[in-house]
Amino acid sequence: MSVPDHPVTFASLPIAEPVMRGIDAVGFEACTPIQARSLPVSLSGKDVAGQAQTGTGKTAAFLITVFTRLLKHPGHQEGPRALIIAPTRELVVQILHDAQGIGEFTGLTFHAVYGGVDYAKQREALRDGVDVLIGTPGRLIDYFKQRVYTLKHVEVLVIDEADRMFDMGFIADLRFMLRRLPPYDKRQSMLFSATLNWDVMELAYEHMNDPVKVAVEPEKVTAEKVEHVLYHVGRHEKLPLLLGLMQREKPERALFFVNTKREAEWLANRLEDHGYHAAALTGDLHQRVRLRVLREFKAGELPFLIATDVASRGLHIENVTHVFNYDVPQDAEDYVHRIGRTARAGASGKAITLACETYVMALDAIEGLIGFRLPAIHVEDDMLVKPVPPTHRKRPERAMERPRGRGGPGGGRGGGGHASRGSDGASAPGGGAPGGGRRRGRGGPRPAGA
Image (cartoon, rainbow, N blue to C red; front, side, top):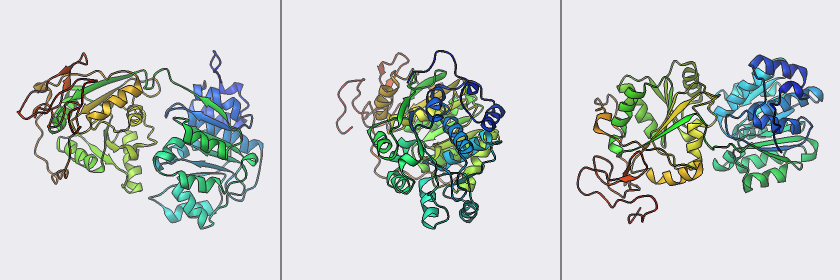
């Protein structure tokens, strides 16, 4: 489907009046591209398989359709009438927040279920009855098997971030739920995903009623107003460089991404050692603590948040000025997801990546996905700040860690071994101690064992 040349307004669409009041209350005016493409289809009652990145307005698109349908077609009160399934707790909480805003004047009830908190409280609220049920697959199945609610009267199904369902191993749970819903021709279904790959479309064709495919392909994979910067640095100099960048950049609100839970906790402690109020957001954090940390970060009480990719799914936080990839993500799509946390809603932002010998090999795939090479800045000695001694338990060494790097094994700038690229993207030798490995440029032979 093509988007009209002129902006599509919500007032021009057949949206129920109480839903329009909610749209006005939250300040929405013209539709985003995914809303302009999907709403005319979904509001007509057809199934939709939509492709859109996080932050493009897809949540509002399916909520508007869900609320309008439920208001126009009053139905059973036993069990939920709409079911929204999302892969992470954070995304479920965000959808519930949006639903409470857009659906404020509808008279409909909403409830969210997810792991890690308020097990009995969530169960009792669900037992009392709800119009729109939002949840993660595991907790939804748990309560369903206890017969806390029924799926017999579900009129609308939404699957959000379907590609992540596959990535996170939830597809069997998802299929369990879908097979217990009313037949696909007796309900309306909407599926949204960052990519409509073969697996996702197979799911759509198996459990949906001839869905209309709508896709929003951004002109650029990454946001227009993100400034990308890359630093090649040895692992032992990442913290000194980060501290130097913090002094130079003076970020007001920043997200730091790492690849492991241990690194997140260590980095949060080290930033605290240097006077930066920071906290770690990891997958095993108790849900009450997670929600408190996110609430403080959104409110500006906590200016710096360190997160792993698993913990960061569904984060929708405005006014993030900087994203630091302290570790290069090993999945190219995670780079796009990470930097999408800044430069939201037309604002500008900066994405800074520190590429050490452990994770640097992932850069090629990232640059292939985003379509350009990350601008590299050579690290000078005066950029580094000597860390203060830690006040917490020392980070344990990685067992049998095998460095991986474009410039070969053996270390980074001070330790010799990997290649650093200058601002023109060319490979420049890393100085330092003897014993460095073979260096290579883009496209050159890889060192043995890389």
